[in-house]
Image (cartoon, rainbow, N blue to C red; front, side):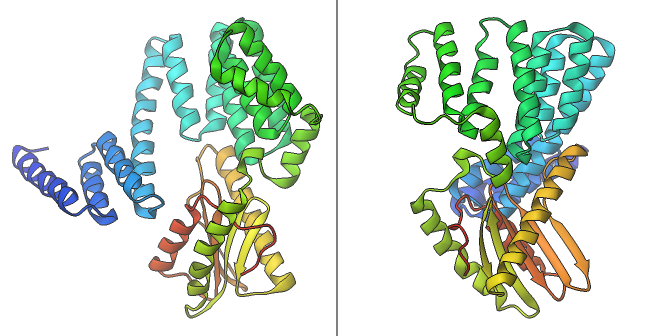
Length: 362
């Protein structure tokens, strides 16, 4: 960058920072983060967008800026690590590369990298990295086979890393998220042998010890997760359900007032809110949206593309535009492509953390 451009860029950054300080809003935060991104300062762009999200949670533009900035920063670091592996491979480089690939959602590539690391060194940390990536694939796609393989890989890492807490903690997280309480209690017992006196672990152990009537096996728990498409900790409380439904329903109704819109949908796990069609048609629409979201997420991760941001289908039926979020997803079925404003609203709706009650229709 030339000297003159640096001067003007510095002046613009000062003005944008002042605007954020005087009138904080999603727009001023997005402008400042965007300027950092334009200058190639991705870490600063992600930091500003994250700061804005703390004040304005769920804002679609800030969420996209934060995610995109982190992705670009991670991609640059990934290229550096690949060069280091080519020139002088060592465990610290392998570990960081696997961690970045896993955190960025490139789970298949993370597993391949961990497998290459293990083949080259036989390091138990490589096996643990592979098990962690497979565990994340299971949490994302809810496939029983992924859960089984994750547990097998973690067990292999345990043997190679005796008295290491990390495999046990990952295994405990998986057991608890699928509701295999007896196995979770046994894993907690193993952890307490490694870390006796840990107050948090002891409290969890006492809680699980009261659930002696919960005899679900790991296989049964994995089957239930695959069937319902939902982990135990993804179930909404009644208060969350009521609040989210009250927040979502007016947005869906407003969307359906737009010309050409036939249906507006919000889905999360096995639950849905549908505005427009009624009865069986509403159920079919919700099922179709859920299927599109699940298959697009699976395909994106298998190709190492991360999480799908938007999905659009076109045909004789019209246009189906879907915005998958971390917890839920929103969709619009219309006779013509949705406007930029409607797409923005769908993105913000998908970012909501709550969920509607089962089978509820607007």
